[in-house]
Image (cartoon, rainbow, N blue to C red; front, top):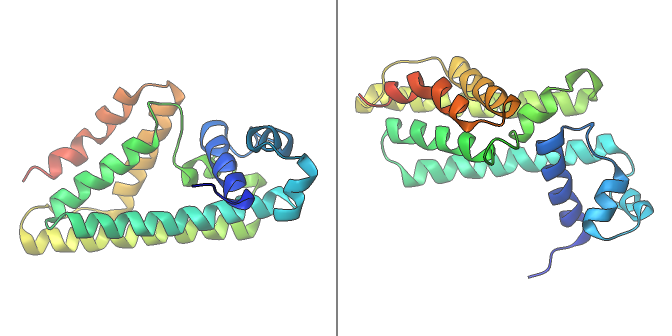
Length: 184
């Protein structure tokens, strides 16, 4: 199945931003990757800020869907947190990438207020989901009480440490206490 040019651009930009950061790629890079002229990108995304905002909006929606799939697939809170850890670990792509939220956050000072607001909304969404999962854990007895904000910070920090050294084992060690918490 072929995809439209806008989606191809978003896919290429997401891969580049997650691997290289938002400053690590250009429209020329995307044009080569997608096989179109650089000027054609401006038709879809007149500015790089507009492209990054569209990326973050798409990523936020995709993450909401991923969290809903976790809820559907896992009945216990502990299993849901383990699935969330696996989701963040998979985003590392063997230590070569970060999740988009973390990748963009590294360049926070160069992002528009709209992009930083979307990143904040993303984190609010994920934190609310983690908080609800901890409440479920208290009710189903599978998860000790925990801090949603600390859990998200652990996952994001673990990604940064692993990416900095291209070593997924750093992620594994950093999230070990969180995984242990799910072994109740």
